[in-house]
Image 1: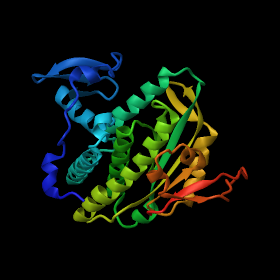
Image 2: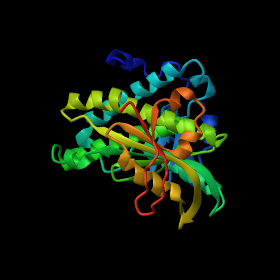
Image 3: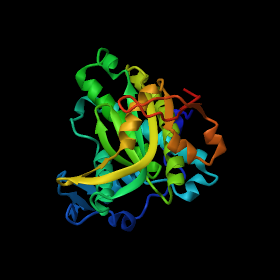
Length: 310
């Protein structure tokens, strides 16, 4: 656990990327370079907001994936920065609770833009192996009986924002939000073995963010602690473009959604395809095999593996 005294230094060990690094990610048909109030930045034509260069520096510090330098001998500091950054954002969002709108945070909007941009690079109807991740809030219906509708909306948005950032930090993308669930995907980067290990590490850090950030901050503002379930599976997914918006279709998405219900609160469940691609014995040892799981609706017998640290 990290103390609140550490929050002032929540970017220790991180150097924000230079403008030229992320300028390559900004499509000219959406982002227009402008000066406003003496500040240089970019006008998002779709969201109709101006984002300064300094704001983009902060944004990219939050969502840029870990580099090999971050996770080679410095993983503890990298995780610490994620937890501390999350605490800062959660506190800021709760302080502004009654000034919030129904709009997602700009970090969520920008991550959705990056996902769309990635998928549109591919040919329509192309198939590729990816890892699918589902993370959802357990008991959000019961939560609605404790807090107001406005408060519940903000709490769910905080949850979605923090889970989305963890996905981005692990070389993943946010596919969509489905009520109180976040659906992410991890392309082969550079191979499916790396994608599976990134996804499992992501799931474990999600649990830390819930325990050491969200569930540390929520009670300070009079809100109950929350619990999550996480499901991961791997397989071929078809990239389709429906109108202007790309999406993923495939059996793996529905399969992960079905066996997520087998996870207890605060537990991770992974499909056999993911488990078989894990080469780190330390990570493999965290899961217990359940061989006789039968998928509802299809009758398919598909082994799943449940984490032992729920």
